[in-house]
Image (tube, rainbow, N blue to C red; front, top):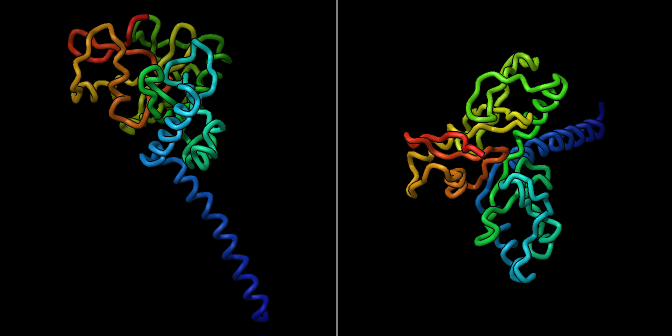
Length: 235
């Protein structure tokens, strides 16, 4: 084999390896939350709001949309004028996070909604639909139950990974066949550190949001019981 052919093969091999490595590196970047990216989006949101008479750059959602999924940022409204492009970890760029706003009435603040749990929840709901009804197991609260995953054909119980603690969180089902992530483990830990007092009867999910980059996606409201432990809020 002459040197010209060998050199051509070496160059081709190098290009192929580089092409294989790039998506992996890019994929890793797309799964990491970065404070500076959140700050950049926050600044873009603030500037858009200031230039548009208080209007926020968000997508329209139904009034019944759960609060932490209700105000997704519309990057088409802020890029490229206020932001060069959506962050690499944003869903719009192939990432695993949806950028959302909380506290929209008084202090619109950018947070991240972890989308990794979406596929798991979707699969459970499809199996429930195929099953004809939710296979309830143990009652946790009024209208909230654990799920008999064996009846749905699972060999291992599915779970959601908490963006707050990286713990494996269980999934629950309501009597209207909606599937939610159970954040009581995270809330229990956060209540130990909470500075502001919380009262029975009020939704305490905000204690997870205040000191974090994330929101508790696909969650039910929670409050505290007489022992200051998190319980599902009766609705």
